[in-house]
Amino acid sequence: MKNKLFILTLLVMILTGCSLFDKEEKVKHNEKPVQKEQEVVEKVPEYIDDNPIKIAFYNKNGYTLSLANGYDGPIYVKKDITTFQVFFSNDEQVQFSNMKFGEYFYNTYNEINQDKKYKIGFNLSYDLIDGTHISQNIFGPSTTQTNYDYIEVYLYDSYKHRNDSFYSHIEESEYNDDTLMTSIKLTAGSKFNDISSKITLTVFTYDEDDFDENNEYRGISKYSVQISNSNKVYE
Image (cartoon, rainbow, N blue to C red; front, side):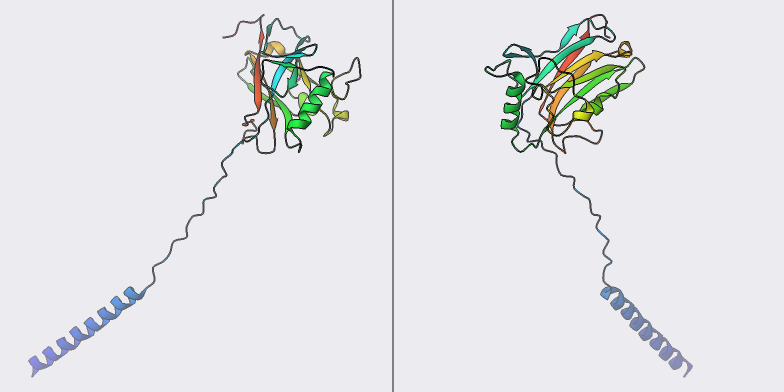
């Protein structure tokens, strides 16, 4: 009798255990998998510059513009270094006639930039003897004052003064959306001798997305020249 009771109890435990096990398996089987949140990565649009404008520095002689290759000569503190005309070409020579340069610049600028999308800017790049690297963007008179002790920058609008025999550089008080920067003059500042490298001067045309995170121009509409002081030996 005791053996029968033991066998019956054991059978009940086995059956009950199997039943519980099956229930657990069914619960686990019916559980929905936990979905992980997908990380959203914001895709930065690829920068593409479709600016069609060609631009360069020129030296003007009468009605002829000759492509500028830079300046290599003696430079003295507080003395003018050189002046470059700005024009919308990369040709070695540009001829114009029956009008002043300011008018020719104005007519060409309006022809290639009818919707006024692009503006003109400049950049000066050089090193100091203490190892500091300077990259200065110039967008108008107010931005010429930065690093003025090293290089003085003067901008001119020959269209506005096309009928004047003499005119001065553009002042901030007269600068507006209609101002044209037709030429640039560089003068050695009071600390010019603290510059240890050759100077790179660049002219460019730009719209709002043409600068990288360091505010450096990254477009394709540009032209650069080097300024060298023949009184100095560069490393």
